[in-house]
Length: 411
Image 1 (cartoon, rainbow, N blue to C red):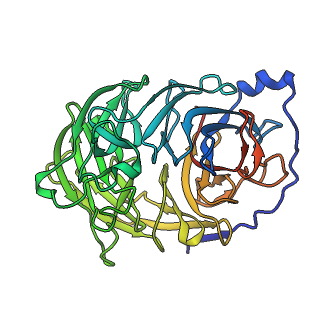
Image 2 (cartoon, rainbow, N blue to C red):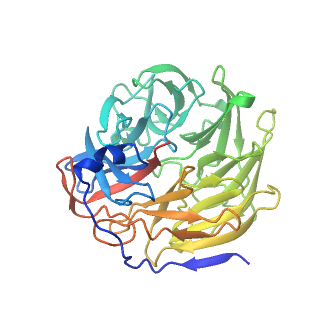
């Protein structure tokens, strides 16, 4: 039987303290969590929030700094999933069709160092994965229509997009279309990627950010990494409910080289044979409800945000042919679980939600049993467990409530 934990999320006895000037240097050399956020009222700018993520620090869970970008908040969305070695993080405002590159090498003084919109004939970037040389490979949902960008302009503007390799200066190196004549009547809108340099492959999922082709998107594509040649478009497994393949989103590489794909219909697809002409996708699990969000793989565990239960489910994927649920954590009766991001340094998972009032938490994972629990020592200045993005004065000058999305830790 899987372990089910319902969190009370009560106030903890947290030390509430400021950061003395003498502690600034120690904090800067510590361990931080960076959360990509924006003005919920869409009047001020997108910004990066810097939170102390060192469990040994007296200011653990407290806000250390924040810095605005030049982008007025529209829909601050995905960052990279893991902090790159360079410390320069890609962060996207999806509805605006713009991506900012933020230098986080000095964690208490973040700064925007580049930005881009349409690139190499493609628009609406969504996900960003690092290549072995440090460049980024990004999925772009549409072929660009001139210089126009932004979701309202691009929606229903085409049936395919592409992938683009990008430098940290925000310039395109090479690009490839994902258009496939055999699928020209349905949407092939690139959503996320899995980069597999060991076998010279890239797996791309197709799922729209809008309602266009939402219910009919059920494909993934394989590209050759060395020249970005499209090798094939393949359908996912609908499973017994006939909807486990709808809108494939996040792709994650497991220890055995297979790729697990989360679908918006809360399916988990396992793709094998990626370096062969005929890869195979199999629905190995389907969670309750729909609108499942960003998963993480930690060792033998696949951790999935499941909004229908207002929490998270952990699967043991050590046997890819027989995936099984081992635990679930319910935050409360309203929490809109969405983003997850793993910290290999402190062995914790960050979670964010798009709902106003939902806090950002750090979760502990028992790597022997797969059980999740809220880290109750991670507290904000109000003494409550978790970090609040509701009305507050932010260090960069903005006062108000923010919507948080992507979150990553220092290396």
